[in-house]
Amino acid sequence: MNGRGGLSDIPIFSGNVNTLTVDYTANTNASYGGNLTFTPLAAAVPEPATWLMMILGFAAIGFSMRRRKDSAVRVNYAF
Image 1: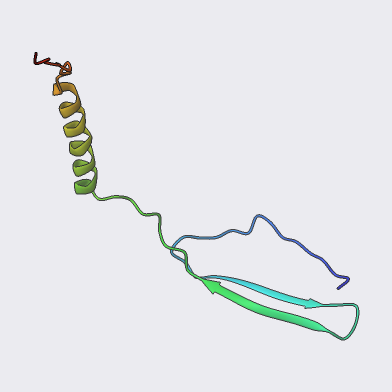
Image 2 (image 1 turned 90 degrees about the vertical axis):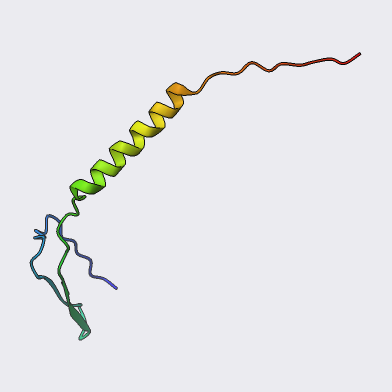
């Protein structure tokens, strides 16, 4: 294959139908082409309840770590 190509900075719009069309003819009679159509999803933003549960979870873990008492190991020897 003698041909080579490249493309950058293709604008992709969230929530819209985006189509990429490729048509190529080589130095011989061979050619190829195709279409790619896709619709990217909008950026996912967590709901407020999700944020609340996450913050409460971190607070509970921090509270339990702060309240944990370091118990010294006690060894009793029986004679």
